[in-house]
Image (cartoon, rainbow, N blue to C red; front, top):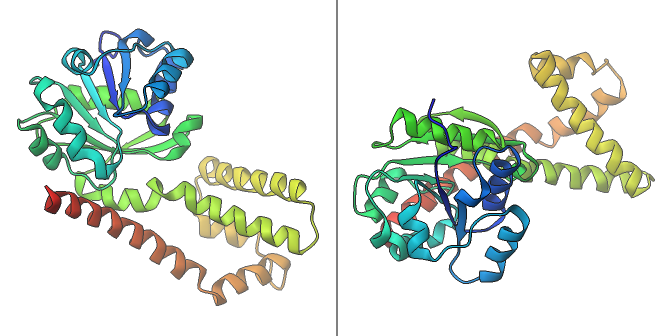
Length: 278
């Protein structure tokens, strides 16, 4: 298996996802921190902050790009054209590009680079910040098996990794890429209900979080269908049955289906907008 130990990595973008990945790489000792650097377009204070926190190198743009074996594209999707335009002249053949950008295809990134660069597209989620991301990765046309091995190592440092076809990444974006926000929204609603029925907010928060963690562990460890686990705790005419009946009356499953489908559609729209704007 290809090893990251002798690779240099440059993050183009220095936001929360880049920091989560840097933290995972450094804390799991996948490569020396000095072999990592980060660039952004304006905020040098942020780069110094990351260097102080994780021991990564501070390099000028040209040196950072020319010397990198792996360039991780972590800017906002709307900024990808300008970001690549600023580095394109410093890139070299066979550098591996890994994208964490929603909606942007590997073909489009190769087009911006102007050559047949190996590109791998990924969709992590914000739980990467605590090392628990659910990440899907897909190989572009010019990426090799060794390139994919390197990408797998990077994302295994921040959670679990699933390999998918690139055409499925819009669906992944709608499901797990945006998934943490759906859970947070659920918690918001449960906390509001807790207040309305008289629970202290801090007590409700602790109970809700443990309930979600416990349910997730049950699904993972028992490996049983969620419908079966639900039915096991839903006694006829009981409290859970009464609550579930309200969710069904209000169209809970239909709303969740529409939510995930719309997020996936929006990912596809973002990709089309980038292509049409270029």
